[in-house]
Length: 79
Image (cartoon, rainbow, N blue to C red):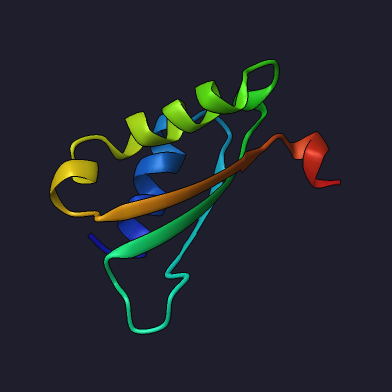
């Protein structure tokens, strides 16, 4: 699964989200990193925020993606 598809899945599933997905290791397409900003994370624990992202990616986590590092924050945290 390419980075754009992962971004699209996350943005479609989490309201008002902006996802940036990268390959954190050069020449390694199996490991991805996702930075996601959304007001939907407000009031949720870090675990709950990450669960929203993993749920958005769905079954691809067990079939197409080897590893996904997740960083989440609210828009207020981004300022």
